[in-house]
Image (cartoon, rainbow, N blue to C red):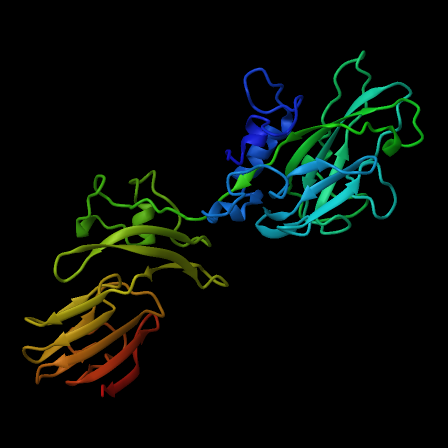
Length: 400
C-alpha cells in the first residue's frame, strides 16, 4: 500500500537508480512540464481514485495506468493502459485498463511511434534519454509516443532530455491538431558504440524514471458563496445571479461574466417560507450567442418544495419555491416576482380550501404582455413555463 504518486515523487518501486523528487535527486524537466500540463487539465484519470475497495487503488505497480516496464525483446517497453485527458478530450491509451501496449525503441518506418528524428548510433558508448508520453493520435501505438534525445558519452557530460514534444508532439510528418501531452516516464539507456542500429545498441536494463501525473475531477467540492462572512446565510447575502458574481468586488474591480460567452457554476443559499435556509446550485449561462449574449441565472437543484397554508397572497423569486402544495384560506394569488430565466417551470397543486388560486394574476402578475391569470381550482394541478417575457400554461387538470 502506497501513495499512487510515489513512483514519481519518491521513485518507489522504480529501481535503485531511479530519480524522484526527493532531496538529493536530480530534477528532470518533465516533473515541471507535467505540472503545467496538469494545471491545464492534462493527465491520467485513475479509475482507482473513485473505487475505495479496489486492490490497486493505493499501488504504483504493474497493471496501474501508465506504469512502464522493460519488455522481453531488445529495446522493448511495455506500458499498462488507462484513460487520460488531453486538451479536454478523453482518450483510452495503451488499450485501456486491464490491457497494455508494447513498442520497440528505435523502430523506424511507417509504424514508428517516435516524435522527431532518431539519433545516429554513437561511435563510442554513450547514454541517452527517451521520453515516453501520451498524445492525441491513436495510431500506431494506442496514443503512446516516444522521443529520443542526443547520445552523450559519459566522459563528455550528461545527456539532455528531449523536448521537441513540448511544442509539437506530432509523429513524423503528421499534422495533428492536439498538441497537448502528458509524460509517463523518462528512460535512460546506455548505447553501445558502433552497434548495427539504434535498437541493437540499447542496453537491456535501462533506468525508468516514473513521471506520471494524475488529474482528479470527482467529487467536485463547491465552496458556499455569500456576501457576508463565513457561514452567513442571511437571505440578503445570497449570491444568486451573474450580476452578484460580478459585484463580488465593487467597481472598479467588478467582473465581466454577465453578457460574456462564459458560463459559471456555484453554490449559495435561499430562504424558504418557514425561514429555513437551504443550499442551492446555481448556473449562469449566456443566451443569444449568435447576436448579443445575455446571461441568465438558473437553479440546477434541488427542487424547492413549499407546502403552505395561505394567510396572504403569495409571491416568489426564481430561486424560491418551484413546486407548491397549497391550502387556501381565502381567494388568493400566487405570482412570480423579479427576474426569471427562460424555461423556468412552476408547478402548483391546490390541495385544500374552497377558494380561488390565480397564478400570474391580472393584478400583480408577472408576464410582460398579457397575464394568463389561471385559476388553479381546488384539487387541480397546474404546470407553467416562462419564455423570458411571459408565462404559459402547460398543464391544468384535476388530481384524482
